[in-house]
Image (cartoon, rainbow, N blue to C red):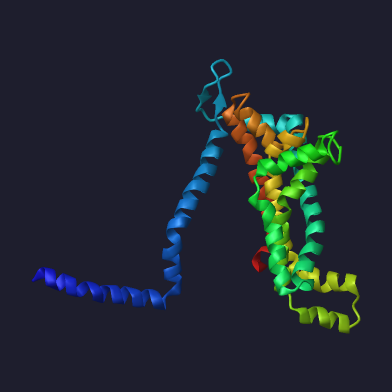
Length: 289
């Protein structure tokens, strides 16, 4: 008798639960996203917490073992060491240069895709922009190494310029796609109205197009800036003797075997990105994404 009652009640409970979830879309969405968000939070925030804790440890100079005793020594070395300040400023400069170059190149490409191309051509152009992302990172980086070598097509050699050019190519799709999405949402009627009111191309761009697509450009800049700031593989391949933050972290994990100091250096791009996000948030761009 108990079994029959439980069996009969079960479909009713399921119907009530389904009805509740149907009426409360927010609860349904929360349940759907809870597992992946919990895993992402555990993996990402847990890794950042472990990184931050390790940065306050030290390494025994004789045995190479990690000494789990709280110390500010790693951060003191970062602040007082002129070479590390130079590396940090150089890394910020490279990330800013890559972002600016990608913005200048991406905007006209995205505008042509969103406003000048036919719907059929738009689909093919989006595929063309995405195609380089399907290729291996190393293949693209070494292809640029061949082109930049003294015997290559460009013959510029290796160094800081080669690093900026290669990173600009690698991260360009991450700038094009957000700007394209922003321009696609821009009504053509606004452009027509600006033209009817006598605004020429530059004024239309400055007063209509740029203000409305600025959040999309900010979204693209977050990708290009952060990816360039932490990159070390491209610098190893085409950078010559150039040192960026990522290389310092890599070298201290590998050759120097100084994991706590590497963790301290790795907190620098995290802090820089937090400052960058806070700065763009004050512009209101993040709220309009």
